[in-house]
Image (cartoon, rainbow over all chains, first blue to last red; front, side):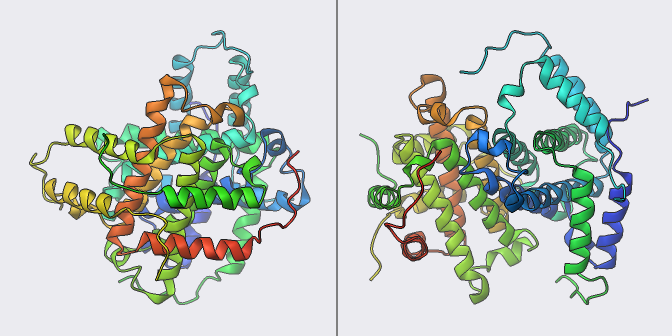
Amino acid sequence: MTERLIDIAALESALEVFAQERNWEQYHSPKNLAMALTGEVGELVEIFQWLTEDQSRTVADDPRTARAVRDELADVLLYLVRLSSSLGVDLNEAVVSKIAANAKKYPAGDSIPKRK
Amino acid sequence: MTERLIDIAALESALEVFAQERNWEQYHSPKNLAMALTGEVGELVEIFQWLTEDQSRTVADDPRTARAVRDELADVLLYLVRLSSSLGVDLNEAVVSKIAANAKKYPAGDSIPKRK
Amino acid sequence: MTERLIDIAALESALEVFAQERNWEQYHSPKNLAMALTGEVGELVEIFQWLTEDQSRTVADDPRTARAVRDELADVLLYLVRLSSSLGVDLNEAVVSKIAANAKKYPAGDSIPKRK
Amino acid sequence: MTERLIDIAALESALEVFAQERNWEQYHSPKNLAMALTGEVGELVEIFQWLTEDQSRTVADDPRTARAVRDELADVLLYLVRLSSSLGVDLNEAVVSKIAANAKKYPAGDSIPKRK
């Protein structure tokens, strides 16, 4: 049995109903959803592009940008979950399997040089 | 109290431990994680770029691409959750709030022309 | 001597002056410019995301979107040239060299199946 | 008459011939080319994602990454020019017009705070 790291079932259902009620399913091919995901990631990246790494760490503390950041993170997740659903992919299985592969590829304790 | 549409707490913890064990936290500024997210979305999009919309619908049925698609979807989610954690953002609150805003912006039942 | 496929020297100079006059050079690290490029590509992709391939072919004919498309294409090129300059890369050499590599990788006349 | 900042006519022709000889035109809808552009930008961004801004400035000096950077910059330009051609857009006109708009939007000499 696959370990459970995420539960997104309620969101999947909510997004499916949301699309049905608006007759949007005709537009929600995986190809189109992948493009929409790109657009939202672009908007998210724009928030960080001129910031230093240090400034980026506190961006959600700033009342001027906090809401924008949360909204863009949400938009990315909404399209990602919608894309995953449209493909019939079990995102929890995908994540569990990918982390296992990553753990093999990057063994813990390998010495990593301190960043300059 | 905010409705619960997703539960990603276990994944957030797993990714935090994973990064700590590899001394990766020094690299995981929100700015850098936003860039890493971009890279993964690019890999996901590459799977769909030459497909028709119809072909894109069945891409996860194909044993040659199913694993690739699941891996790329997982990679995007891993960096998105990591980015969200690094900013201290409650992704469930963000998603619930964004869906409410979308429902207001795009009222259900508005007539949407059938796609040509 | 490298073949000449593009001449962007005048644009490179114009962008350098433009940045100097606005004191923007401090922000124009290659890392930041790569992020800005991402953001602009995201805006470009948004124009096409819900269109069919056929609709996408005529998008610049439509007075409502023609200017938007041209502006987004320009924005992508501006950041690409600026990024290239900031790295001291000769974009013409890069393009000539990449096309030669592509010609080797994808020989002309290889039979390509007609798209379904 | 529009000022000339770039000349990409030879590249446009070369890419058109290259696509014709490989029967690729059937895949080169603007929608698909916009996605391919995204994928290439993702690969470019991956080079910079874990670097500091300072490290990013010298990335093309490093023999290990110089060729990779030049190749990714070229790939982005190739798809951008191909996309522009497929839409019948005059990229020089687009760039000249966008710079004029930017000059109006961001007047030179406006005091810009020194970056912290």
